[in-house]
Image 1 (cartoon, rainbow, N blue to C red):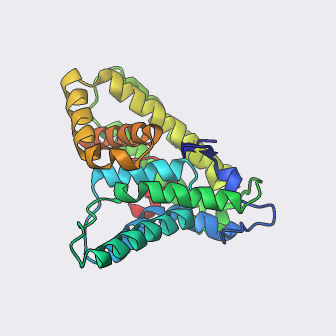
Image 2 (cartoon, helix red, strand yellow):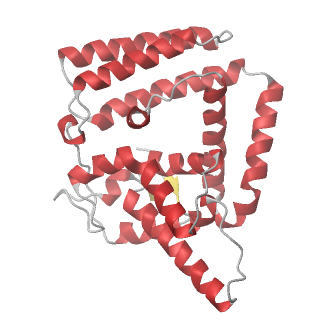
Length: 268
């Protein structure tokens, strides 16, 4: 189970669910999987709504959302954290008669999100919950086709060794998973998605090995520049996670390689 540091403890997915299928923070078992696939969209919409004007999220913002999702931070906790951050900002702006600076990045809400997670953990009891494939609306055939389509995209990418060999092995594994689904449908989306995350990590590690030094230095410098305004609002562990997600996202995009998580099936 992955986790994200809050400064005083780690947040794990199993720690914010209850054996009754519903957390005290108000997250239902069935709704949890729905939130899993709507995670990015709902966070983006809430941020834009509270900001009061359309602002497209940056690569850095998307990387931050991915760290929350992979750490199992509940969607409701993120939304409450965004609301809390803007409530404080709006109160400050009112006292300053509208002269407060505009919020220009989601990372500005990071500390408030972690505080919201702490509150949710204190009000919850721990037990893991599984959700069946049928509950999500992601039918077996759709998932199989998604895996096969990603295999084709990976095979079409022009990669240097050793990334090429790893990519071919990942593509073959995706085809194997797709074929297996048609024989015996998976009962847990989370179980399948964990496998896909492992495959993506293997692919990314190979890309890092094959990448030119100049490219990696430039990407890390870009991430550092974009994170600079928010360092005081984020834990050091969280900053490292966001930097890693930023690097991974940019490297995959530049090579026209797909993200493998089932989340991206709903946004393709």
